[in-house]
Length: 179
Image 1: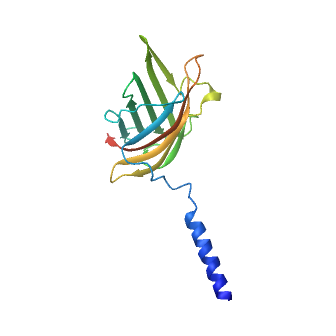
Image 2 (image 1 turned 135 degrees about the vertical axis):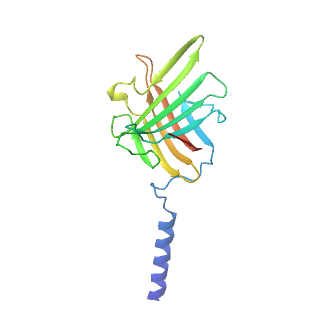
């Protein structure tokens, strides 16, 4: 009887631990060639045929940098994220969290759109210290397949204009390596 109870406890514990989601494990549910984000409460119409994800290797005093650019498929809008590792000779081809707070791992984002005949640019750099909330998280990197997946969100600003919120940003994209 004692052996049966021990077996049930072991099986139950194993099943519960196996079902628990590890927060450090990247989400594999996002298919390759996927980029999605919400800007100003609306889904951004991504043009994957013109979207680029580039990794710049650190060399000659330059920092390791990641650059994600996507234009809209239906409107005159563009969205760009840059991530920089300011550590000498450090790459961005590794999981990590990048912020706008000028730490070692820095993130910057820009949203550009045209309204009428005027163009408007909102950036993380235009936000005051209290609004620098942009975050880019690189969740997984597959160097052999040249793919990176991650998430991003935060605020973009322009003078006294209302803050532009970027939310629910997720990506799983192939990347190119630039010198």
